[in-house]
Image (cartoon, rainbow, N blue to C red; front, side, top):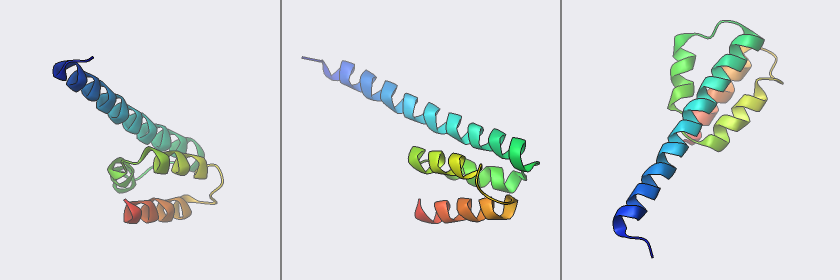
Length: 84
């Protein structure tokens, strides 16, 4: 049986891993955007950093490879933020 302190440590580790996964996904989206679509405006980068759902971030990452242009991707980011 775990002590309360051990449970808190485990919860902290899990939360840290989740935060790390979100940050990593956000940075991957930014890098993929720049590689495929060119310069990323700071405002769009801010919007991407506001998204905290790992599932939404993964979906956006995949969409980078099928959108036709920057505006189409930005619209998807805006829609994702509305759902957050």
